[in-house]
Length: 239
Image 1 (cartoon, rainbow, N blue to C red):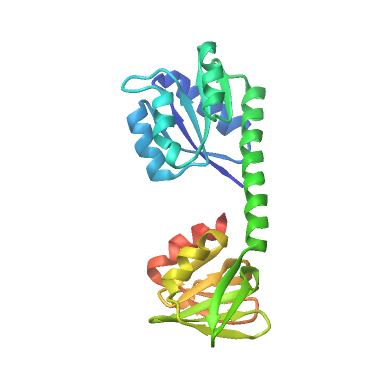
Image 2 (cartoon, helix red, strand yellow; image 1 turned 180 degrees about the vertical axis):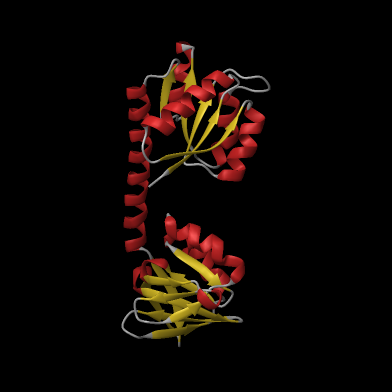
């Protein structure tokens, strides 16, 4: 996994030095943007959705802690970089991954990146466990069923109704629209590739780019990818 990274520091020399360390000595890191103020940094974070942000503390127009407070609604991996040791405790209390003193030591930088990757691995493990246990509730002919989401291949929507296609060839018609299923299952590796189809991405075996684009599921079923969702779907499958 390549870590998308943003650097925020009002000192251009510090930005250059950190970028050089990351690009030349740290594998699997992509510096996608740089900023010299908290405000411009916030805009770049919202635009690029990075995996990790290297953030200076003291900057004009708002310090790093102000920016971190703004981002609390959407947790993000922050590594503080500063010349002032007195901020270390506050940085860790604020939930930062690490705190690096300038000039930045390469070994400490690599350790910080290892901590970021460890967080991703932990979150992925927790998400996988949650998905394996999660079941959707459906009502059909006066009965209530619980279907494990890992057994669902795809869901096809038609107006107020949806057909749930599960492994083994079975299917269930339910009075629930596709948008409701999308809202419920998107965090469990389901993606709406077309206005009428929500697919379980763990069963995507191939993506065909000819004729607009199709996905092929493990059972051989081919489903068209909406042109509007194609780029977003490709990015989603890289995660």
